[in-house]
Length: 359
Image 1 (tube, rainbow, N blue to C red):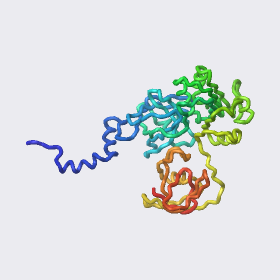
Image 2: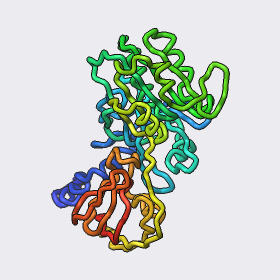
Image 3: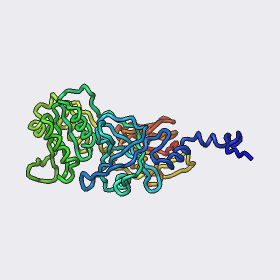
Image 4: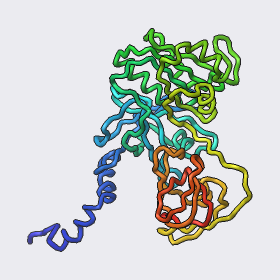
């Protein structure tokens, strides 16, 4: 007797299943966790500690990875407490490296950064997005450069410096790198080594809270620029760091063109009376109540609802959502979204009235 595994009826039953991307990814993951039809999955192949609160994760992505330009970032996804979450991290490797890397500073109340620090081990699997962002320099760039960095804002700049080193670029480069304490300096030894190898690279480590021999203790100011960067008008300026450094740079370098990568967005949330608003989530057929004070994304998370999100600072647009009814305010620009069926960024928007969201 001849046994047939698939007849026409069986095929008609199984074909829709086999054509489903999620189902196929599930099957492929049992062969190799990094296999996927379209998604970029990466295996952790190394973990390095740069500071007590900072780890660099070396990642080997699958064949869907198409490379990156130094200075770009990726959205990293990983299951946290039973749900997939995403955050954006700058790549700290050079395109010439055999693996890619992200460097993650552990944040005191950072659910995602703490999860990566505590749970990622050699062999762990992450999902990453294609490289994004325009905090980059062209191959033909030969102008003198000034990089301003604060804390983890050094990460995209470190990638650029590593790449320039391998390409033997001759740009005259100066770096002002601010941290509260010496122990906070990420890539301290690596940056020193690069500056010793390349006479055209000068790195200044500046501390804002600690006084130590051999280190300046001060924040960015006009006198510092005059002394350390007397040719500031001839340099292209790149800045990546927290809101305090961004604000200082805008004042000290007023009128100058600054290419920025916002590392930490400090949204201006004014004091206001509590105003309860109702938000209807269409896809869940559910209504919740929000305070109408914090960004919608934060308020949703406070209610146990976790829409896709990434950078949480208005750059990656992962949290973009259709607002079908109501008024919201962009906390960065002050723009009021009044129209129906208008896209808003949940991380940057606050509810100004009852809302209806396509979530």
